[in-house]
Length: 255
Length: 255
Image (cartoon, rainbow over all chains, first blue to last red):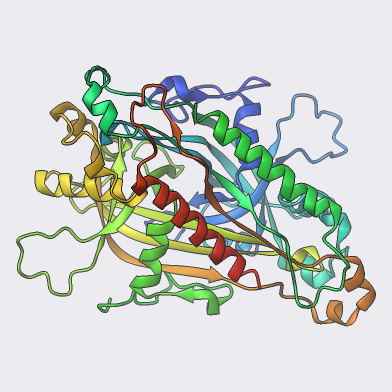
């Protein structure tokens, strides 16, 4: 692994449409950070089907006192009640539980002239890593704040903090040290069969193009117990910025 | 397994917030059909990390000639180039490759007064099943049409069909015979700590509520090669209906 990209091997190499494969940290990590949900897979001790859990998480580099941090790579932090269960029911706590994490953002449905050329615009990342339950208190607090703010920026500092001891204990934090990973991205309009493009009758009859798609946030809906006057600016701004950014991207890559 | 729901066992049982668990076919299968993308996990032969692939798919019951179809349950059909690779690199083709499939729809971010009560509104399904590469030509055609129309209704019959032999061969179809599965659904507004609710100062300072979210389709964007006059009605209708349905649901469960 270099300091800026994952080495391409048979494990992480994109095989089909290899031109869509990306291996640089920036691309892989930004997809993980932008995906609204991650899918985490591991092999349970007591079962021969893989487990899959949807979880929240984000990339991060805990600023430890270790001065040898030059060249350290970001880890993936995951967050949730499921964390401790993963370790109770799984192999290999010492060497790290082997897990695979997928982040997928769909940006459009690509409707070609014939079904077998249909496709999708997407940003997809998969990473393979070793997962550890974080026990260091400083790193746990840092990660709780970091993951919360990765969902809605500035949320942590605008809530009742710190959590009580009981609340903090109920939240498991997992650090995944990534061994390797890759991303795959498709953008653009339809790719067509050459003979279909020569057939003007067909092109007049069948609509071809892209249905852009994105995650849209609606009007923030206060809880019945809410007593604030209005939606805080950091929330409205997040909703507006995210909606605009996701829509702009989906529309741009539809062409 | 009864005719209408998956038996609850340690494999599929919802442990945390068990009241959110659902086991009836209708709930589990409808989440699979509604999720825009599925995450498919299996254990490759040559690796000890699980593989995860984002794939398109839907539930379906192939109308075979078999008159013993009373009580047969829908299978999950998956579709894509990756299909054959899954079988090349995996164990157990005869008994079916063991795979786990997750379908996750995020409906909102739930922002409580304190970070550890933050949550999400979601519809999530996980099924465990035995996967087979479909070789019967009639079932393959039926499944290609069925999966295509599960993405955009009526699309198949409004394209250049049938695919050529080469196109059809390039598309792998997998049938997953589901062994068990379950769903988990959260709806509603924030759940708060009792002491936080007593603290009116806190409730005036911290905004609590739900950010509803859904998948929105934008204006269909014709390909540069498109020669139709306008967007066909079945596409506009799908975009409008899906946008309205997803928004209505997300707003409804935010309360």
